[in-house]
Image (cartoon, rainbow, N blue to C red; front, top):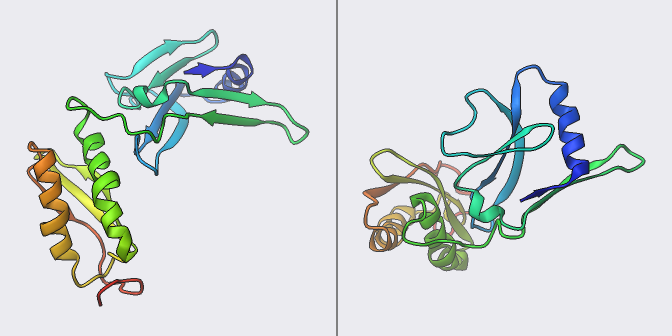
Length: 191
């Protein structure tokens, strides 16, 4: 990842206006999926993880979430001044590319299966499913959207489609659970 000199100056100026920050934290939400978002935030004491990759820049420290590091390859943070003040831009061309192997975090492998195998099938009914979290006992908490939210067949889809597919491909997963509020049936495929 490259943080240009102009971006470093801008970020150092912002950090200088804060009392309790130790640097910036860079991470990607839902890396390797079409919904990936590259984020930069103030890093306060306790915000980071022991596994974060820390890089000391001349004017501040940057903490990169270890899970996000492979997706931040070729990324660029830049700052351009303009008549309105300026704009900080983050470009991460690999953020949405699936980079999954057998030793990838379980969340990345689940997202890979959901976005490449499960969601294309659900799209025929205008639906989708996304990962919310993985619990300590390796249960995938999922949320349905689109035509799957409120659908009368969501339980069957969850057990016979989504769970079956995930357990076949990710054997250490213990199961799946749906946290969707299915009371809203406005867009449901089957009511």
